[in-house]
Length: 256
Image 1 (tube, one colour):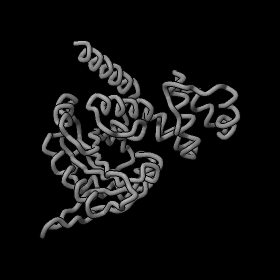
Image 2: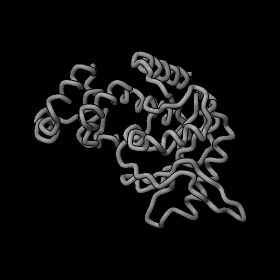
Image 3: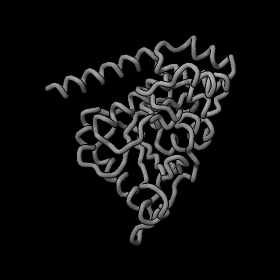
Image 4: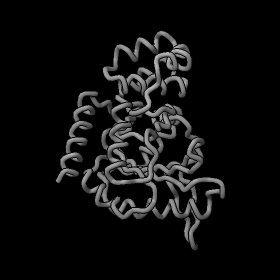
């Protein structure tokens, strides 16, 4: 089930009567026109329809989601998560994340990126999706006699868990997972409440090799996501092609 929109995207598609009664009438005609003019497949249209209604998207929010190919990015994230067999819910995370709203130079530090995301927190939350509540940056975790500081900490209301975003301005390296797992363990032992689910970590990197990610995640036990981030818009055809290539690559590997 897609946590962004609350609907099973690939099976048990709703009937027209169900759509008319529960969804179509709840959205403005402007948003309907945006979806019809900028989408092609039924699944893509359903995704944006439910996401816009559940997320209470304005026309501007919906247009941004369409222009940044949010559907393809969610599908890419789900495909990679499935390939590395993580325990990550489908439909929640994206790959890549698009931060075109940040005013930072091409060459920037992790501190620059963190500061810019905090200054644009509302837009950042719109990009990461529905259900996230901001808890702070540089959140202090005390382990032994040392203090450790995380990057961006959120709580997800639907998943009932802490979600930690760690920022890396270089391509993914396997050792990044060790630090992320350490933070997740500290959060689960010292911050998580008894009724909450295990914490999830998201590594935002400036690029990654899918095969390296697969090897690194093969024996990883913590729920984690490794995603790219971009500070400029990516043409939708590029993302569509990337998704098709990834699906074909994984299908060929499974056949071998």
